[in-house]
View 1 (spheres, rainbow, N blue to C red):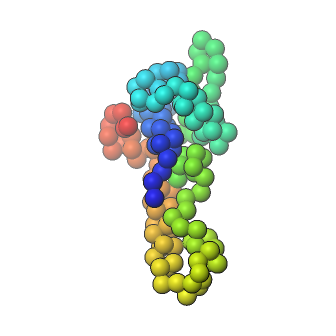
View 2: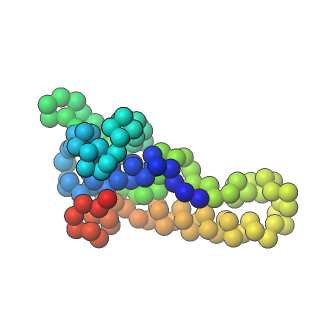
View 3: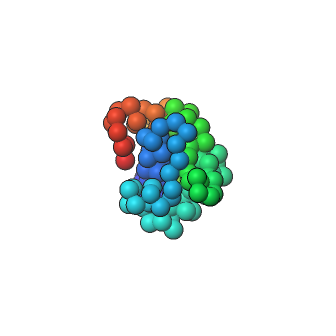
Length: 139
């Protein structure tokens, strides 16, 4: 399982904004350049993260992109799911009927536990922890 490049870029963009400090904005061109994200791709990402309530955008001379909430209130899981949708290691995790062995499958419990562990880890990891860990630009 691998998150998409788009979700990776989204994580880097949010980490970049988290490192700017409270209520600071950045131009998408600045984020794109410093995080090595294609500008047209970043525009789509910013739009998706704005719809998800994670980023705010404003136009004009003092415009730009900023976090909609504080870094400690934005989890890795929220960003990944805003871009990629719900995390799913194997379709049998949400529907045992997707497997020919159904509820008797010996592998399903391992997939269920692995998914629960991954989702939990991403859910409890906020962007504040990345800022504190690195002390400077996180991505």
